[in-house]
Image 1 (cartoon, rainbow, N blue to C red):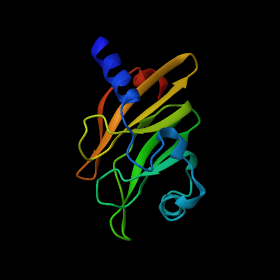
Image 2 (image 1 turned 180 degrees about the horizontal axis):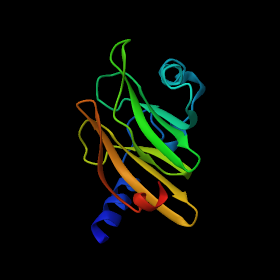
Image 3 (image 1 turned 135 degrees about the vertical axis):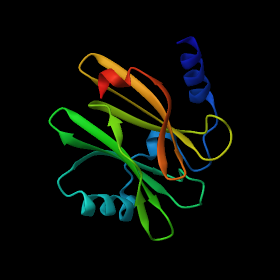
Length: 148
């Protein structure tokens, strides 16, 4: 537990990549194409939160999307820009409410990691993710099983 907290503190204090402002970059109106791709292929899903950054170190912005799949269940995936072709990662559980997405280069090397945190009732949690070879990987976290 102490290790996880130490990693989070270190990540929060670390440098952000130039042009990125952590959670502040979330939901910019410029996103258009990637988010529209998600909506076109998932018209039944309500988008709750989204954010963009280059998550696979290819020089193109990718889009994290948190969306509702049932009354009390949300999921998340990343839409990767492969040079005009868009590819979705696997989906993973996402927090039910109060979602925050922050971009952090935790290990100092590509690809960029991101933190998702949120709540469900009084339960709170967070997880650190990375896109590896097109797969959304949960590196570590705390309490996500209770808030997703």
